Image: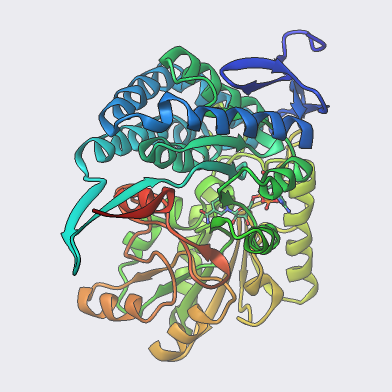
Amino acid sequence: MSLAGGLDRRHSFINGQWQASVDAELVTIEEAATERPLGVAAMGGPAEIDRAVGAARAALAGPWGRSTPRERAAVMRRFADSLERRGESTARLVSQQNGTITPLSRISNAAGPVAFLRAMAEVAQTRSFETCRTSTKGRTIVRQEPVGVVGAITAWNYPQLLAMSKIAPALAAGCTLVLKPAPETALDAYVLGEAAEEAGLPPGVINIVAGGVRAGEALVAHPDVDKIAFTGSTAAGRAIGEAAGRALKRVSLELGGKSAAIVLPDADLDVFAKSLDDAVFKNGGQTCTTNSRILVPRGQAQEVLDVLAAYVDDLVLGDPLDEAVTLGPMVSDQHRERVRNYIRLGESEGFQLVRGGSKAPEGMTHGWFVSPTIFAGVPNGSRVAQEEIFGPVISVIPYGSEDEAVRMANDTPFGLGGVVFTQDHERGLDIVSRMRSGTVGINYYSLDMGSPFGGVKASGIGREFGPEALDHYLEYKSIYV
Ligand code: NAD
């Protein structure tokens, strides 16, 4: 231990063992709310990734590659139990690293991933992986086989859920996997290794190598990796999609967003107010589906602004481990600066600053806090309204007609979330059907792990969650008999 009392994660989890890194750099991870060192983690490089991929390939060639779905479901359930036992400490560790408030972290980094793992075990056990049909010359068995070795690369905002959105379908399908978590949340990733070990997952089925872009690029480029499952920014997704395309690897990409909430003239503003936790400010805006553009009827902008201002005034900023806190810090100093630069941009463009601003929130001398900020009268074409900020920064944008609202909602490179507020359900359904987006809500927005989730346009390719998640981890084989 180089760090008194801190977490020491300098070993990668490869082939069921905790192996000393061969080409890693040691990095100190700081607590987002206090800036105190939390632990050290090894950031692996290409040699480390090569060892992990080798282990995953070997495991695929072993008994795991011939396991039945029922056998895999049993291991997955034991794995879920092991993770559940660690749930509270995992949730807190993630909160310390990335600033997610503890109640949300318990859902998205503990209960949620466990529930999805169990759901995928159920899918593995109950769905059919083979059908037989008559052909012109005989019969054809159409079998679905594991796609092979999966390289999973994830972001830091919901690290356990993002990892599990790839691990669970990969295991259900019979694949093996190398997970490369984001460097910001390297510490909690190894909990997955401990739980896998305790649950008796065969060595090499799950391998974990923390690291940055260097490790990620090595994983994408590795010839023994058959599929890349990625969650992160659109810029990184483009680079990964390009590399995977050249190598003709399967790839699924969960990328950024700049989603819109359309408030129709008949909206119930109490319903709108109640939805803000989930739909707009979730995880301090560090959520890919954040509906950070609020489109309001031109004549009713003030009423909506009043609701938003009252919501922001009630937020309690502070340490995410404090149960009374409702808004934590940003994940890192660098990310805080990025968010603040967008606020400075809005200020310099002269948008009406309703709440917040680029100054540090009052009394917050430590930690990477940003003042929750509302801009009004923002043009939809401005950078603040078009680019993903990934923080608590909201643009209120006036519209004239319903058609204009839909046009504005669609007028970004992204297509991930979106929500419409109206008391007329049919009208709501009509509006969301015209929104070019992978997921949309009527009067609330909240991820449903039982249904496919993902984006269109620059928000990505492919879907995670729901039983459909499995499709991306399977390959058809036709056997003529
Ligand atoms: P990021 O793209 O910088 O990094 C994500 C991961 O990719 C990290 O593990 C990083 O090390 C790795 N990486 C970066 N460049 C790479 C490359 N060229 N090759 C291989 N690996 C590479 O994103 P971030 O800042 O960690 O996360 C925030 C972004 O993630 C936001 O844009 C957010 O919208 C997006 N996100 C999307 C979803 C979704 O489901 N659509 C969910 C969560 C986050």
